[in-house]
Length: 285
Image (cartoon, rainbow, N blue to C red; front, top):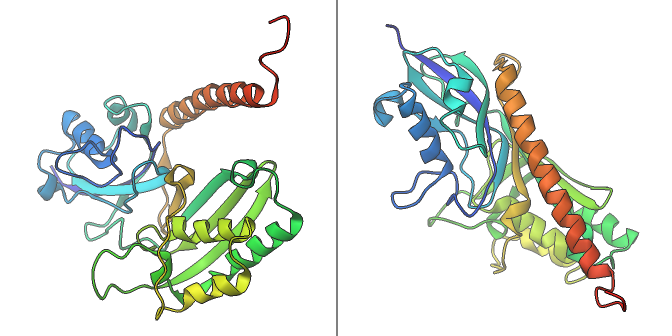
């Protein structure tokens, strides 16, 4: 039977259960779960011969809505067949046939990440419109070509740290700050470190001029990246020539899982909000 390469769209929710997305010898990862399901359902027998590869790696606690992976197989994909072998917080929801020499990582035109955080949690409701405007201004500065050595965790000496950012935006949506970043490729921890410095501007720890100094690669700055829980790999774009086939049952599985999680955590959010802002030691209790 003829072998064909397929690319797949999938989601996952980052948690302490997974030590990031990329395979690690002694830890459970998202990639390992995918391979296990594909082997169980007889899509893959040998990792290397299948040419399995994931388009982007993410750190522990980072989630994804539209990540991708590809591999070569003799079996035509049935998405729900694969999904039934996956944990509920990981799911495949689209696929497409691609040429044998196609690579989900290198053929991507750009990656789109979002970072979401409740602004009251970061700023304790002390943020003014001036703070927000300065944050939006600083975020826009990331667009274009820059050396991001001070906005990344460098993994090796002489690593190329120049990147082209297509989009860097920030908006306030209700009680949440939502960042959007698009680029063909990002450096390790780049987005979380960019966000961390925008937070510092919002809280008054640095001003815009001090922020601009970070673009000077001759100086080195040490600081912690923003919390990985807020980061989402939103989508990986391959242009109009690649059309994904979406499976209705798989999308329904995904939406139902998200809905259950939304209800679960919105209830917990309200519970903790009430416990903070109401006097739980009132007389008569």
